[in-house]
Image (cartoon, rainbow, N blue to C red):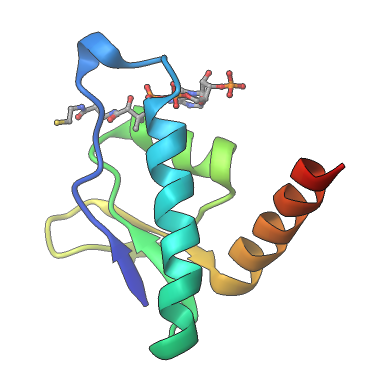
Length: 95
Ligand SMILES: CC(C)(COP(=O)(O)OP(=O)(O)OC[C@H]1O[C@@H](n2cnc3c(N)ncnc32)[C@H](O)[C@@H]1OP(=O)(O)O)[C@@H](O)C(=O)NCCC(=O)NCCS
């Protein structure tokens, strides 16, 4: 598993697309890492309900009922889903 930790956007800079760029970069990096280190999924522990909705609605993370050591729900996104989304976006960029 690859843990996406401590990703946040300052509240005065929220809503400008920075979060989307950061998460997409992290997802692309996870695909590269998965080529050399076995990994089935990316996991993240969103800081609050708002961030949780963001990961679920915008990126397809799932709440599978795991709670992190800090008491936050731990969300899960399979490498297979990340790879499919990445190749779809590559195809869209090429057209
Ligand atoms: C959740 C978080 C990462 C989002 O980052 P952001 O830069 O504000 O979000 P973006 O501008 O990239 O949003 C991209 C898209 O997600 C949508 N979106 C934003 N927040 C959302 C939410 N809570 N639920 C669903 N969708 C959301 C936007 O409407 C936008 O949609 P579009 O692409 O269709 O226009 C950010 O708000 C955050 O860090 N929240 C935690 C608060 C915090 O603790 N910050 C300080 C840390 S030091």
